[in-house]
Image 1 (cartoon, one colour):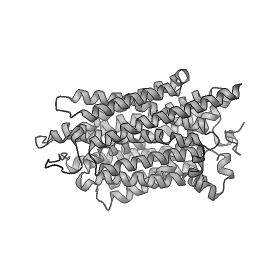
Image 2: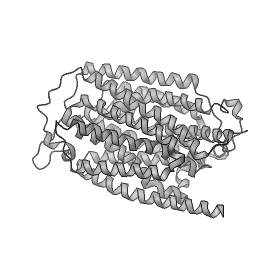
Image 3: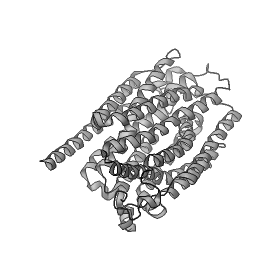
Image 4: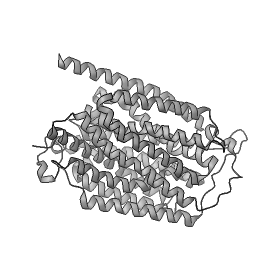
Length: 451
């Protein structure tokens, strides 16, 4: 039996047949180690590197170059293969963590660009790897394809979302060692009133930063996690054969695959929906952590709040991947969209105070429940709708998300939180409506085929 998509190498030769779940666990552990460091650092960038907007600018550069690398991802994966692409990515993560020991425009920006240039192939490789194993397991066990995709994506994203717990607890316990003077914080400019520049004569709050030795200790722990992830991939992750499309496509087709895939109206209609999956995360990483947590409660609280988010996301990813075969993806997506809409509306009108810490934790938990659905079901959706061109479809998926991240981070340098939230609310409504159109189209086609 062959791996899905007409691979020329047998599963037995590459250690896939009968080992699909184990393969997914290995790649999940690698991502768990590396992203324990990366996601915690990302959550802190807007608070830790405030000077001249360095933290947000570095994130803008990172995600801007993911757009380029996502477009080139099919060709890069065709050339290097999945395992080598992952190993190069982990080296880039190690360099990125090292640059945070001395964060300046000369150190953090170049490593952010480098990380962006390899992140497109990284996430496309992850998506294709899990999809290949899911299709193989589905055929081997004669199981429902959507259920298998949901289950294996659920395993991966359970490990992935655990990083929000481990990384953020590390950051908070380490940063909590310092003492912070919060009396200088102007709480009236926090929450929905937070703006990137001084406006109307109002002063903008500056987050109190931790001492350098404390930051160095935190970064050293994160660096150890990065190295562990590299070693796990190098030692235990099997290589898998290239898909039929990757084997037969030439260099020009690989380069243009990301754009040519948009000729499929299903993918074109999904772009706003994919975009909101990125935008809601961007709100979380930048505005929620800075304007609703650090600004009021101090930077040392970011990790604790985000760890509660990680707990909820982990549980959600695990549960929804199991119940998806009973509920269908559209019901789960509807729930996630409703949760995000409620959160954005609340953030739009809310200026938190020091005695409302419990509300921030509750909001993070609800956000995590929705995020677990976005993560598991979006990957299953792409793999299910575009089984013959997974590399190109996932490259487009990650390119769209990267472009959305970049747009949000760039406008964050100039626009107040309230304006950004309004834009995200509109996009959420439009994207959800266009996703509904795709589901109706797929349902009608399936009904026609069954007649």
